[in-house]
Length: 73
Image (cartoon, rainbow, N blue to C red; front, side, top):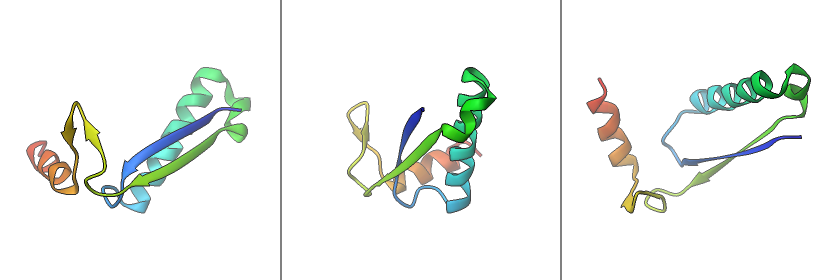
């Protein structure tokens, strides 16, 4: 059974958006492995505290995520 661990910055996404991500991940696994695997696919969400996450050596914060969101509008 596939187990996918999704790590998100705490507070960066609403509960609804997090659920959509979980559903999308499950859909992707089923699309590749076959529909039978859907009911056996586990998605675990771990939330990381603000400031305890980095990408490419740069700290990712709620403020930096908000800035990225505003730039994409």
